[in-house]
Length: 220
Image 1 (cartoon, helix red, strand yellow):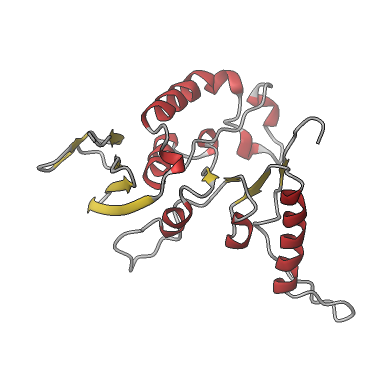
Image 2 (image 1 turned 30 degrees about the vertical axis):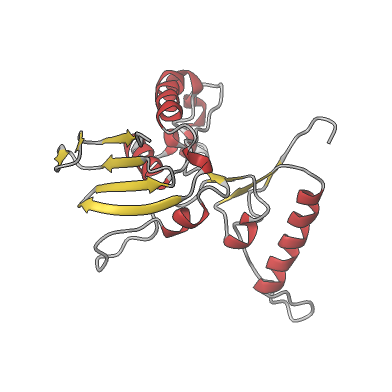
């Protein structure tokens, strides 16, 4: 409290498990209620809270949600994916997707963040990534700060400038313009276009370069 430091949970608000030991069983619902009780106490104390993934019951107590799944589950029978959860909570709580420098494709991750209204997230350490060779932490091989700082600054500076102020607004519409091309509309009529394809997209209203996002602010 003296240092005004928040608390970040790795499992609370993300993992929800039961304990089925017959001597002292705890259902998943009881486990959820235990988590909620702790989150309520922390929130009442004025401590900022960060949770991972962001299960619905934890959203009311979170100031920030990290590592949110922005892609959903793929299926051959689906024509398109709609970011329903992100549409529902946008403007109520800030959230990010996976760390951009730890994903398989940084451009894809940035574009998905732009489509869903998520903030950008990075994970860094100061040591050379070679120290991870042969360890159980190879997933962090892209977390070397010196190797990523310039690109991260480029991504973050542009993103912060072009999407400034949208995190506090509700998403009012999400349209699929074509396969791999979407438009996300905010309450002030700002539109964020995203083109994940390798071809430029053009219609009577807009031209979106390949593998890019485009922010169109309302003139009012």
